[in-house]
Image 1 (cartoon, helix red, strand yellow):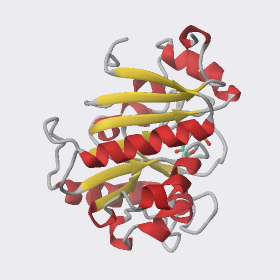
Image 2 (cartoon, protein in one colour; image 1 turned 180 degrees about the vertical axis):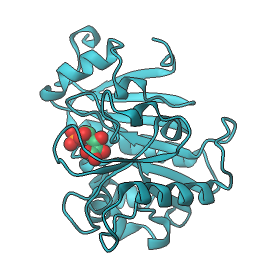
Image 3 (tube, rainbow, N blue to C red; image 1 turned 45 degrees about the horizontal axis):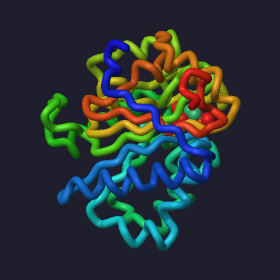
Length: 250
Ligand code: 6PG
């Protein structure tokens, strides 16, 4: 599949095994970098079990929290603290208890200004560039060590929905998305495909029978954002048995 030759599908038994396998990959990825580590989290419900696992003693004690920085690949345009806010979910699940606040890089969604996802995107882009130390992404130096991803029922990933101009963006690092294609129907802010690709590893987590139809389409090479998302390093799809397409069984 063009552009996705570095893609690997790893099947696991169920959501619990998926969370454990993902947590081990997070640790393994951190272990490859003795300096400052950057991890881009994802929203939705799929990563919640992984996040909770990272806060348990077994994992928490193995993470050098002071040198790991946490970003988010997309945000629902609702204030921090709102149950729909992706970074709030990650903070509640593990970051609040484990990570120094200065290492948590949320997409700002303050509603004090007139609601403006584009402005929020520009602010986050500036934050990413400042963290990276350059205005252009260099393949030799990926922005992130690890990028976590999910896939939605329409084949979106992050907040890059099929047919939306945001999917084709190649210049901006972060974009505002005025309307979502699926629930929750709030504006979004999303990292673009080249920004998400700038990582050593991109890790998708997919579980449940209701994901099997869309995953079959994505892995068959249909032109969908989730299929176009891949790392300049390694791309791994962790999939549980219920979500695994027929072709990948046995
Ligand atoms: C979001 C996400 C989105 C998500 C997929 C899968 O803000 O909704 O970042 O891209 O990963 O929609 O969501 P579920 O894990 O809830 O199925």
